[in-house]
Every structure is written in structure tokens, then in C-alpha cells.
Length: 109
Image (cartoon, rainbow, N blue to C red; front, side):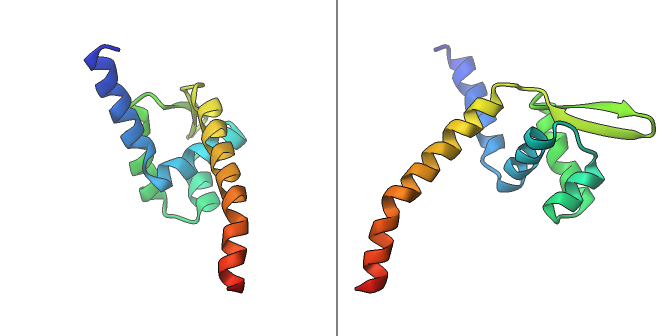
């Protein structure tokens, strides 16, 4: 793989390493399009905070926005994120299930 692609992949993973940005992407993948206000209410954070995270995701072309009258609606532009998120979440659930018996033994011991 060329160095330029590796560096771009590293930038993309760095953007996705933030829990708030992952929550935003999860909400957008679930609901398809949302405004900043809707995202803020859904996630329980301030609209300016959502806007800052969306600006980073926009600059990386991970999300896109469209005008809907007086509102801007955001959606996921990079469709490769849906299967990636499903893969990672499935793997984490499976790991948690494998570890669960260890946790119950530790609590009992």
C-alpha cells in the first residue's frame, strides 16, 4: 500500500477514535439525516460541540450536508462506515461475551 494511503488511513482512524464523533456517526447511520440540534438533543451534548465535530467529519468527507429550507441536514457520505462499524461492534460484543464468564467468577471469588 502506498505511503500516502497509509497516512490517509491513519488520519481517518484518528478522526474515528473520538467517542463523540463515533456517537454522531452512529446516530446518523441509524436515522440517515439529522440537524445539529437533533444530534445535540439525541446525544445530550451542546450544539456548538456537535458543530465542531461535524466540521472535522465534513473536512474528511466522512459526512455531508444538504440544505433543507432554513436547516442544514447532515448524513454519512462515506458508505464504507456502515459495514466497518458493524464489524467492530460485532467483534466487541463477541469479546464481551467471551469475557463475561471470567467476570462472574471474579465477582464470586
